[in-house]
Structure formats: structure tokens, C-alpha cells
Image 1 (tube, rainbow, N blue to C red):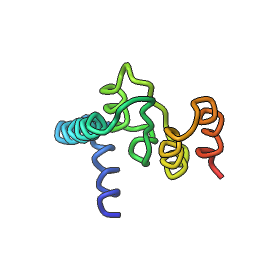
Image 2 (tube, rainbow, N blue to C red; image 1 turned 135 degrees about the vertical axis):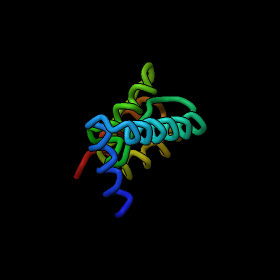
Image 3 (cartoon, helix red, strand yellow; image 1 turned 45 degrees about the vertical axis):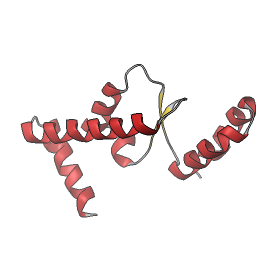
Length: 106
């Protein structure tokens, strides 16, 4: 919880132009995208978690680093994870048809 409070403060400071906060935001985005590149094989990139699903400097920096990729935002992170796990086991058309059932907010 303390870390979440600090991330909001860093985001606010970065938006106000604080150089150290801008550097922290860019490093966070760099680390997130580097991690993605190590595990992502194919298909769309799905952003989840409040820092990446809400407007703010970290999301903006990540989106910039992912330009050229198909990027969507998860509405329900658990459902999205379940769909991604099930996707290889389903025919493509069935996986696409089931996506809303997995990811719709209750």
C-alpha cells in the first residue's frame, strides 16, 4: 500500500516536470517493457494493473515504447489471464468468441 501511494506521488511529480520523477517513470516503463519482451511470444499486448490501465506518465511511456504493437487494456485482469491461458487450447474462432466472456466486468 505504501508503494502504491508513492507511485501516485511520483506520477504527479513527473507530470509537473520534476526531472527525477520523469527519470523514475522512464526507468519503470523500460523495466516493464523489458520484462514483457522476455516473456511475450505473439498476439496482442494486454496491459493490466492500475498504473498501466489508468492515464498517467508510466502508461504513456510504456505505450510509446510499445508503438507498433497491438496493445489493449484489461478490464478484468484475472479473466484476461484465464483467457490467455485457454487461448492455445481453443480453435482461433472459439478463442475470439469467448474473449468477452472472460474479460467482461461483472
